[in-house]
Length: 364
Image 1 (cartoon, rainbow, N blue to C red):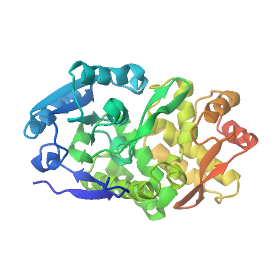
Image 2 (image 1 turned 120 degrees about the vertical axis):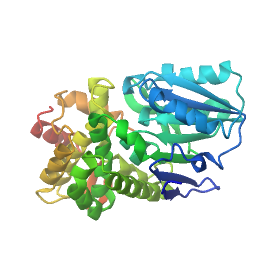
Image 3 (image 1 turned 30 degrees about the vertical axis):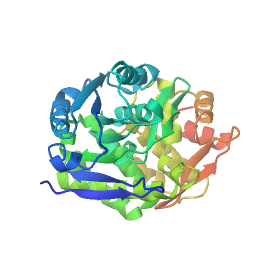
């Protein structure tokens, strides 16, 4: 049996669940035991991940469920939409599957978000399990129950808070991850240091080369610590009424970049990495952080293989896109800013200051 780290998400109403982290978990029978009983399991994956892992997962699940179906969607953020969501629902309805059905999200953040949303709305809710195969999904999007699809006017604007039954993060699936996708995941790893754990930021700086070389011990620690921080935050603020917003450090500008360029042009983690640099700039510009913080974070993001220069969309376009952000209130654009290393907060930022930052970074 493989060595497994377990992080527990603690929620009200007996909805606690485990995040299991380790190598060989896809093959381990124990990974799939103790889940809700069902007549049918439905694995949802995409055209990239399904050929690598779907047959293996289906074989394991057939030891638990009488029937295991597979739904394969096109790959890419540009397909995180109504059409793909409807493909999942078409299968569930077309096969007349009832509430005794469990969905398994096998893939990255896009698959996890769409499968979770489908589970939330099918017959008003069926159970689902996250099986994240990208670093970004293992450290962030598979954990905490945010499910959504994109709208042309805004990222993740249509969705639901709906928690999985379990998260199985098999580190071995990261072996097949393209370098660009690995770097995109590192953006979300880096994020946790400035917002919640200054020591972890130092650890990431010291171990970035090992992470990029896919050292399993380094990856295991990064995934576990990231999940511990997110579990702590989600346990206190499941529906993002306050504290949970800090997990969106870098996302306000990041989401604007994704929507402004067209979904899929930049990976989510690439946009977030660049967005963190600009949010750090705002943190300095507003006097929250001392000089040098922006450069420290920029250097780390760049070392991770991520872009630090935002696309030149123009100030008005950026402002318009950011006003659609879920953190905006009454037209005021709010940013997660760093108040001290390991501490973040939500701040309403005047448009003029945002334009200053965009201009300084060549994006206006």
